[in-house]
Image (cartoon, rainbow, N blue to C red):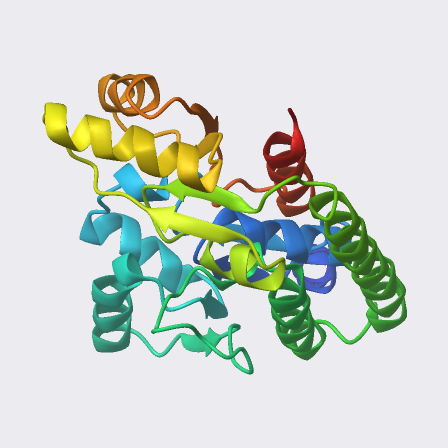
Length: 259
């Protein structure tokens, strides 16, 4: 009788066990939890501090406890994926498939239409792992896609209000956003410059009517202050690895169009 009770409870645990999925970065976690209403256990290999994180092999091994790993083929994923393939049989799925990349730039999700493709790819993996709740997931997928479409259209409308489409950037994180909305991003090196370069930068800034510098929060504050004070611009901080993709894209647009 005791064995029967134990087996009964073990069977219940199995039935109600949450599928385990590993992902590269928090925005993928956001997609899964939004669609599944937190019915999945999601392990993000990197946090929102992706740029400053250096993972140990122990941290990478934790991924093997999951059924599948969803990758975006980011530069820092290369070694962990190689290690995962060597020590486990975890299913590794590229959820950026179907996206046309710009010079192998992997930061594709800043474009809402690219993010839409990623969402659909992630959904395919979700229903492979849990068919029981497919109707719920399908409805939530439709809602999320509608929200993404709305963000795409609202952003297009907001960007159209700009007097000019020129900005400085230190990195290529927002290249897909820029291309989608026809913004002109002038990339600058993260270096200090001399008096002649300061003069040339100010002339260029005025010629192009550039008002803002788009940066990652991890950029050195001293360098940011130096550049903005010597280019007559103000800095906008944006972390593309922020978990809540929708809120982050909306904030990015708001910061860009703000006068």
